[in-house]
Amino acid sequence: MNPIFAAAQTSVFETMSRLARETGAINLGQGFPDDPGPLDVRQRAADAVLHGFNQYPPMLGLPELRNAVAAHYKRVQNLDLDPDREVMVTSGATEALAGALLALIEPGDEVVLFQPMYDAYLPLVLRAGGVPRFVTLRPPHWRFNEADLATVFSARTRVVLFNNPLNPTGTMFDGEQLAHLARFCVEHDVVALCDEVWEHVTFDGVVHRPLMAVPGMRERTVKIGSAGKIFSLTGWKVGFVMAQPELLRVLAKAHQFITFTTPPNLQAAVAYGLGKDEASFKAMRAGFQRSRDRLGAGLAARGFTVLPSQATYFLTVDLGEGADDVAFCEALVRGPGVAAIPVSAFYAAGAVRRTVRFCFAKADATLDAALERLTGATLGSRRPFTAS
Ligand code: PMP
Ligand code: GLN
Image (tube, rainbow, N blue to C red; front, side, top):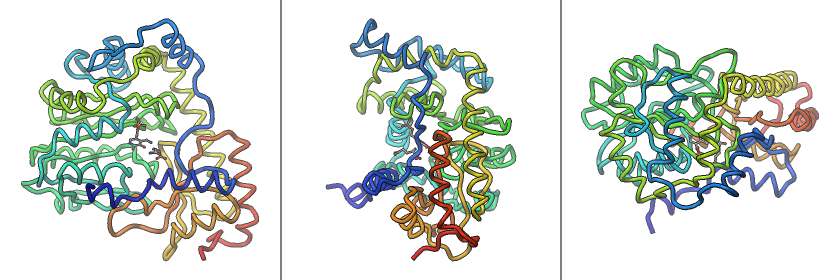
């Protein structure tokens, strides 16, 4: 058995969702909306199942979806992508990440990662033979600077894996940080693997800027998106990868031996959805922003220090110096009955243990019920629920 996967713990999302089911807790852990998602997009998928072609689609994805992806990113991010040579459809962003890491890394290559990082990154990098080099981000701003990059980039760096907006913190890196990162990528001839699955779920009018659009990055960026996040349908697992033709050809080789294709009916529905007008994306953002504000205000009223969230389905609270986020989350799920995610689970080493992630992509009644459960636990204390 391979020791990397044998030693890997069950994902913190799976663990907390199971605990929530067992204890009857309200699940604000794993990130998924409780809304069924846009009816017209789901209807398109249903129609495609019943009346469409349900055999293997082309390996790179349905032409109509690749065209829709290119047109969509031209419209929302002013990217010029050739749908035939620079866009590939994958079974979720996860497959895109796995394929890209397998395709781009040779054993011994160094890979720069920013922690907290999405849980799949490190096992995949290690299994591909990569040597991880970590930039550690800390609350409340979760920023990096040039000195942080200078410490981890070397002549052996092959890939930087960059998640923006960042799960679990709900923050976006600004233009200055993108420019720093681009400069290091160019100077060290590094490929940037950009996990931008949260690019559409942004708040307060903040607009996502793809690293691919920063000067010098077009030829060395692999951009990854996910329909699951764009349409609030996380189980759909339809992702897209965008890169210049030479890079995409290599990624396609990995894809053809992992999943080869992605369900054509879902692809057809996503192609339709990407063409919807800006108003529907705006409405999606406004809905999640309202939920963010509802949960954030409720937590603040109960004594929590709520950190800013500019994107994603998540906000984090700062429990303060010396806190133990894992013990806190266990106590929270078993006591008042609310599941959340300890942010330390997103670190490989030197974890920050003072922050906890809550998912606000839920109906008002669910958020209110969770806040109600927290009320008794918070009385008179700034560190509301002391970990045992
Ligand atoms: N990357 C990040 C940062 C994520 O948050 C997620 C899912 N929440 C994924 C990748 C996986 O996306 P998909 O479901 O499309 O595989
Ligand atoms: N991306 C989701 C989250 O961050 C979880 C996905 C999963 O369970 N692997 O909560």
